[in-house]
Image (cartoon, rainbow, N blue to C red):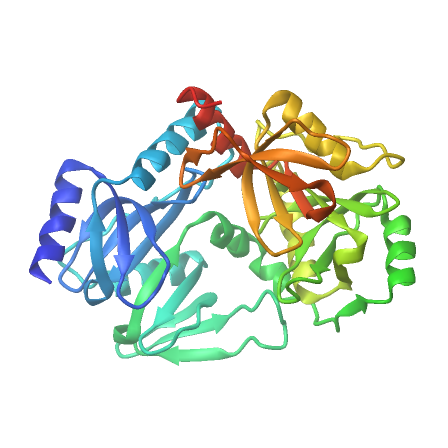
Length: 387
């Protein structure tokens, strides 16, 4: 424990970018230590795109390691610099000030109560993540109104012992949106999911939704727990192109999916209601897209979009992501695209395969492009001279 505290104080004193690993969670937090207390610390955090993403409180006894140097931190520093240079849309970041001599948990929870902020909590001996509004802070307990954006019927009010709270995320991009949306979210009523699974009905439904503003979720056959949210952009003979919306309601690039690999279309759900509200709030604040992305692309419905997208990516060395029929997911860029085969140069842990491997066009079930992570990966490869 003493070595962890020493590392945290070093990071604080020298303002070092660090990764903080936990003992019982796979989530790794990246950022700058702002406060070290007797039982916990506060980290001003950044997301995978290098965007300021609020802050997190971590109890000292759940911290496994503080990492000062790694390839991951170098990549994050590059992305943070890019986010500043390109003026990416991002949350305001940590604005609260804390006294390290007083209980940090109660300071955060009291701020959240007064300012009506949505926070994310992790409790001891509980693997779930709870998002909600702090409605009361007492001497022994804190009361939280849980907000379940996936199921509006599951929104209990819980009394918690603050000492049981191991992690508190606050003021991040998605949590800030939820704070803005909370009054309206609490007014929305639960809807039963409306799902289309019959193949002929799916094609008919997708054709009707082309160029419409309606948000839908597409569920792939290979993983029925997974879904992609967005608007139907183009429907071809064998595929659909979705203009994606990410978890914060912003434009998330494009996804091409084979119709043969589509399990279901979700037309209505509580989560889709939540995402519609997020997109409306982003439009009102002019935060709906990052400046380096293009959400106005049009595609030819008469051509094979897998071949077309591979050919274009090969011509411009554009980074894309493929999901193959065998379940493998590959990030990189294609070359030498033929009628049936292509070479793909994979990027794995920042390393580019210059030689590449041969794949069949028919084995590509999904193709994602024009999203922020692909842009940042491509930019870093070009800066480093690998692309």
